[in-house]
Amino acid sequence: MAVSTDTPNSCDALVIGAGAAGLFYGARAGEAGLRVLVIDHAAKPAEKVRISGGGRCNFTNLHTAPENFISANRHFARSALARFTPTDFLAHLARHSITWHEKTLGQLFCDARSGAIIDMLLGDLRAAGGELRLNTSIRDIEKTNEGFRVVTSGGVVEAARLVIASGGLSIPKMGATGFAYDVARQFGHAVIAPRPALVPFVFEGRDKEDFASISGLACPVQARNDRAAFEEALLFTHRGLSGPAILQISSYWAEGEPVTLDLMAGLDAAAALMAFKAQHPKKSLATALESLLPARLVALLSARGDVPDMPRLADMSHGAIENLVSSLSRWTVKPSGTEGWRTAEVTAGGVDTSGLSSKTMESRLVPGLYFIGECVDVTGWLGGYNFQWAWASAYAAARA
Image 1 (spheres, helix red, strand yellow):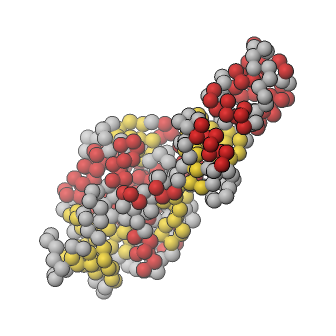
Image 2 (cartoon, rainbow, N blue to C red):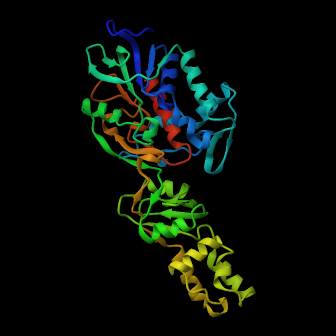
Image 3 (cartoon, rainbow, N blue to C red):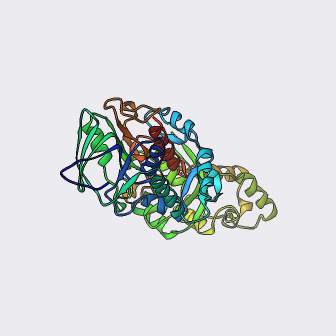
């Protein structure tokens, strides 16, 4: 439809945000018979889809369940997730002949590049009669008796339904803004304070120097605090700690809190060290630990005083070995902060779910107004969960 600043364009559903949720909603709503217009201020659609999963798009997780999500209302996501499951999305991929593979922990990735998912989303939107307009900014939104009057940089659009799918604040260099929160507040919705999630930790002082000295080293750990625990890989960086275990626990972290790392995760370390001692009593503790941990990490732990001065194993009692293992299973660090929005994969917090219908994602305050995807206070774990929320919340709204 042509844009004119004089004569308003009209549609059944105006979607603001051409990411995963917005495009998926547009296609499903179009298939249901609605005239759909999707607009975005960016020059390209679905850029977060493009970069996800190292360019192969970790599009869902087989183990998706409400327990894999953080929200002030932990039950809110249950309805939408039940109505559109990972199996449903896989069936959709099959209809487009998109093949995939599973990595660890139920994470599913495209065999081809992530562009295959973007092409599918755009093709679905076109096939359903929907329209996409990029490089289009929003200047004003007004509620009318018939729906909404939206003033854009390309003209006025009147729509019966307004769907906010503009995401959160993560990765601002890709165009992320707080637009969704501004709209929510405009129409009387509360917003749970947004914060970076799935984000690396940074440190100061000696910790920063120590971790930078072994930057690039990875090892399996369990990262935990009082609220959650994740057993995955840890990565030392020039500024602190990253890797899946750290990204996961970061979503449950509050500023000023310590994080406990079990460096012996998954190992019967005491038994292994005692067996090593029995076979090699004249070997050093360093050599024994290097059979369990990376040598560079063992050297760092020694330099920090986190392990003894590397005596011969023959000089260590079983009790001393057990105490050492206990200490390394409770290695506690205190981040000075996170990398922030610059590298956060998603946004925690967002539009308060108490003002939304869990079945349709529609506002309880303003009929015809919907919030879907990352802008809602529903944040998934690392590993495809946030994409599944995008598909499920969009489907729920489109089938309302």
